[in-house]
Image (cartoon, rainbow, N blue to C red; front, side, top):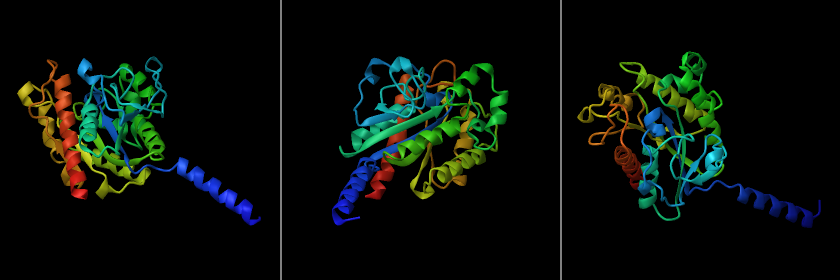
Length: 278
C-alpha cells in the first residue's frame, strides 16, 4: 500500500471513529423499579416543557408518540412505557440540567413495571417470577421482550456508544413487604449491572427512593426500614427521603407534586457527587 492510500485509509478510520465517539458530556442514568418509578400520576401542563439537553431513550416502540425503541428523544413525559405518567426520573433530569454546565446533556433509560417484585429484575431467575405474574402484568413484561433486566442492559449498551453511564435510580419495594432478603436481591441486580455494562461501583452510585411516608398514610411506609439498610450492603447506595412528598389516596403512589419533589431530591443527591469531583 502506497503512502497516499495509507493516508486516505487513516483519515477515513479517524472520521468513522469520531462519528461514533462516546461523548463524555452526555451523562446517562438507568432507572428501574415498579409503578412509582414508571410514573403513576398524570403529567400536568407545567411538565410539558423541557430543555432539549434532557433526553430519554425509549425502551419500547410507542407508535402513538412517534417513538422507536433505542432512539433518543427530548425527555417529555412519559419517560418509561408508552402510557406512564410523570415519575421521579423527570425532575431528577431537570434538576441536573438546571445546575450542570450548558455543555452537559442528561439521558434517562427507564425500564419499570407496575406491581412487580424485585425478582423480575433477577438476571438468572426472572423467568420463574414471570411465569407466576398476574395476567395484567404479562403484557407489560412482554413490552420489554419478556425480560425487563435484559432490555435495560440492551438499551444501556446502545447508550454507552453515545455517552457515559453515571448512576442508577431505583424505586421499588411495595410488592416485597417484609422481605428481609430485599437488600441482597438489589445488590445482586446492581452487581450484575456493573459486570454486564463494565461499570465501576465506586463511580456508579445507586440512588434508592423511600416509599410513600406514614405522613400521607402510605400503606408500605414500614418498608423504608429495609431501604435504609441498602448502604450497608452496597457501599455506593444512597437513600432518598420521601418525607413531605404528597401521596394519592390509594396510599401507594405519589401525586404529581410528590414525584416532582422526590425527583428533585434524587437530582440534588447526584449533584453532590458532581461537586465532590471538582
